[in-house]
Length: 433
Image 1 (cartoon, one colour):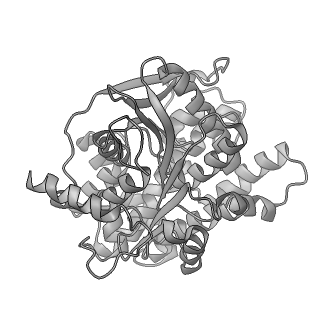
Image 2: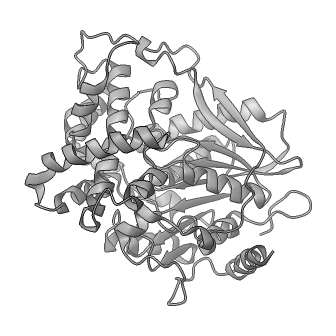
Image 3: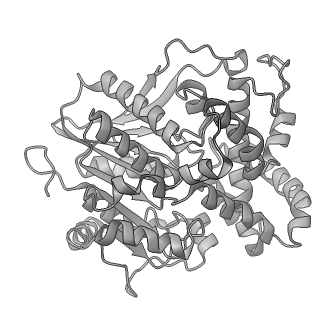
């Protein structure tokens, strides 16, 4: 009861002040950007949430005529999660961050806090997650924000058609974190054109401004490993051995924030290697993305074009190749050629410019439905990016002094701010303004 009272008090205090920058009284305790990103929020500083909520697994076929390669025999459809209220309420679609699935730890936490606040919730995997690439991507080449937004929108439509007879919805909301936060802005822009959901509020949690620049900053974390860039190969070999051994014994489903925390907590990396751990984890997730995209398109990038993978084939060699590919290699050797084939004459610079919130700025500036929560020490943003977001959203931008990238995601004050912007539920099932 004590913790619940604290949670409600923080929520009430935050309702009128989302745009206020968090000051010296901000209680999130981890000061290092990389350490915060890895360690997240101590359990005692998280809001009290129900351990169990009614969840329903949805298996969708947004592309019903799709033929999948045999190597993906285990993939029976696009997976997502519904948490439904028993009464009329707003429905929030959640979009996961880079490489994350619908049941990633952050998605589960946000689903629970929104369900507790009275919302219906549908949690969706990132368009960079292999399950999404295989089942829901029209191009099977993730990374183009406009294309990914269109695929997400189709998935939302398919999910809504699957559940609309089972739940009573007053209106629709949208939220996403990291890359999912950036994609949420593009989805909302598309919805303003098609008007299927008419999202009234769109919350962007630790979004990237420029996808190209932010991923470049993550890649740069590998430059800071002990010994410098020349030691990346040795660092990879040493860390991958630890990853494989620890992954097999830990029964982890994904290389997400829980896995990072366990690696760091068990001192499998040093403090100096923390940034490299984040960069390497990004590479591991990217390897799954690249493999799925290559096989689905028959691109011949890491799997030879004439190679038809069987269900019994070992994929270790392809993983080893994929994890050593930088984002810039993927961009220049696979992604850009694929986009240029679809849009003849597209320049590399024009493609990079399109992968940014600046490309849709006119839809965002002055639009009261959007809000952003960011951290002053988030390494995927430059100082200019943070200034840009504050200028773009004004008082609807909340800046926290620390937390790294999503490290303070589950901190009580942060989660209260998320609920505060998306709105409290009134007695009729509507959202209080």
